[in-house]
Image 1 (cartoon, helix red, strand yellow):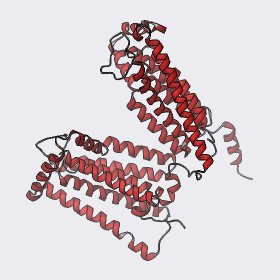
Image 2 (tube, one colour):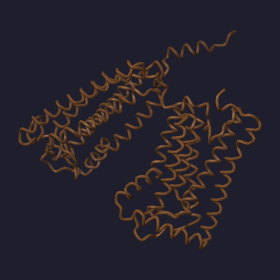
Image 3 (spheres, rainbow, N blue to C red):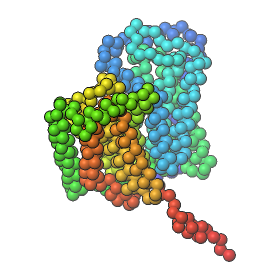
Image 4 (cartoon, rainbow, N blue to C red):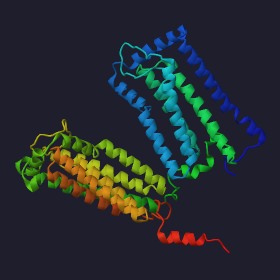
Length: 497
């Protein structure tokens, strides 16, 4: 019998007391802090102001420490929290764990609503410190970062706890707790919150988590399912299989390890050869006029785009060009990896995408550093451009990403709709190439070199890694029903006379 099975009557009676006591204490603490802060109780105000000044002085003037603290506080920002919550909810929805997905969204929405409402009601001003490092917007009590982080990461902990066992469960617990504490501490060190703000955010977050977990338990009872202890078993322990990233692999034996080693070696050797080819092409181009000759329209095409620039096209080209920037490519790559892992329950597609994208980035940086080709001899619309013009990093990353996604979808899915993914695989590179040449950032041969790299690299990675191997053995993308299947279903559903 699984660990989520009903416990004995005595145990079932004892089990809810500790969580109930924790939630009740947190609710009482928040209510007390709310009253004291609202009344501006002098002892609390004195302690808060002295702590704010002392903690802020610990990192003021230390640029490296400030950078680390700001990075930690960024992990508690609303954008990061909602991105993490949204991705987790999407994975749960794909795995058809609708109740857990709804729980994450409801918990997050509650924190998002409570924070501005309470701040407006209390109206507490933020600390004033001698060496301000960061500035917060809005009122101070409670800390939105503290509240949001404990609700978001705490809800993720309750949802995904069944997937962790043994030492991994302890590690999961420590990481979540440390992250929540670090985010709260970062707000104090940056001087944007008082200690009571952070404690109030944590207390309210624990209270809200307890209320939502209790509501989740009621929904399970209403459905006639066994109750569980969220703090030790998770909200839905029987969902463990669906909460695991991928299906368990067989124990790696000697032959499997050697095969993976050969694959890794093959990828590395091919990458080196492709980078060598691209570097050689770049060096040959640099022979003529220091890379600004008219090979394949390298002069005439940038000048033609320059002659046809307009304010409207300038704005549009910037928007299109940004779609191939590192940040946008990284976001799409992460989302694609999460979706393929959630749907296929296999690591091979994720490894394929990771190898393709990291290989592209490393190749681009290497070749650009060696070739050092200047930008086209026209005014560039972008300033402070890093690296050289050859090859186009935007073009290479865009082509590799969207073609790789198309390869995975076509290989894992069935039905005509999978071929629709060829549209972005063609349109996105063409759009990026046009925008980059329009803005005067690249020669046509820079673009062609990126196309050559993407073609060689994708072909090699696909042949060596074989990301669609055994695609239909375990997981696959959804398939739209064929007309014949629908007819057969209707025929089967006919009543028997």
